[in-house]
Image (tube, rainbow, N blue to C red; front, side):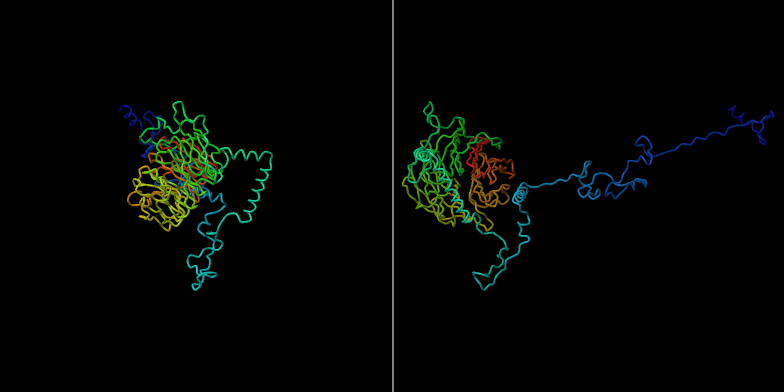
Length: 548
């Protein structure tokens, strides 16, 4: 206070001089000013305009705060899309470019791949660029200018025209084969080799010869006097195994059949033996449990064997050949017990009646199904409602009924022993179903359709298609690829014309796995009835492969 009083008393009102006569000078008081900023400090310091990191994104239409002109007018920078435009797409942009997700189904990919390899395009599949033929005149029934109506095809369309080599090409091929055969026979020692082969077991069977068999093992009986028909102890289980998809190849039998393998069958119940038939007219049996070797060859057909079928107990089997004979063989000894032939008709498929091993059915090429009695060696019943060759026979409903498929693109259900169709499954959109497999639960059966699908039907009192469940992705058009179920019914497997094996999940119809198995078409697959993940496949390349 004293300082303030002294400060006020020392100031002159007139000229600013002090009382003692001397002039005094005082400094102006310093007034401090403070900048008050109510906005929160985020970066720790106030950035300048040039240090602003804000930017306007491509396609941004709303700005929630004021931005300087330099930021709004800055040029676009960053990676561009496939069209070279930065701002055209905002979805899927990444720091290294643009990521676009694509989902292509397996069936669509395979279809496009086949079209690419064939040199075709999708435009040919829907008749683009093709011109319709003239409808014709309604007054003309047949001949040139006949009425076609809406069923007229397209100009240049080859649908319905026989494809294959011409008569000149066939004649040239036969001439080359004859020259090659003559050259082989002209070699020194060729005649003696042919005569020796005629007497041996490896030669081809000629019509009229006696059926013969060849054992390929070291001994037909073991130290306990048991043959290969003895079921191993570990395969006598009654519980259904939990199955898995196979992952590797266990065994390959190369050159199992010259010209290709037509069918394979596991022996019922145990599955320790595998029976195969081929285009060379022979039937062979392999060990699939211990030695994995060829055990016996059955020779008794002069032409290719089309189908084979085990008896319910596995002690005998049937072989159907294009030489018009169906023969009954003893599995253990290789002896041909009986021969059956229906007036020269070609047997396409044979199937034992599960309730009586003395009765079996044969589907023939003359549109008939005949029922044979082994004891009387005669036909006791005929089923003749089909309009095409019989392709498959399948018993279901506790073996009271069976279903037959034919080239007439129909399925017919029969009561066993009664030659009257009780159910006809036919539709204009149906294709031929040459192979059928029954689900282990006996409630469903599947058919290999010729439109590259596996269709599903119920096997109860009412036979009806399951339109929501089908298996696709493979290419089987023109080939009777035999599908097969796992013992627990969890998986369905089938081959295709490209030599692959496909495995689907039965519940979801999703492809679980697929692998390249053969060089040619995989004509048949068979799942082991006791092993959880063992599958046998065969092909027209002459090989049989065993997978686990």
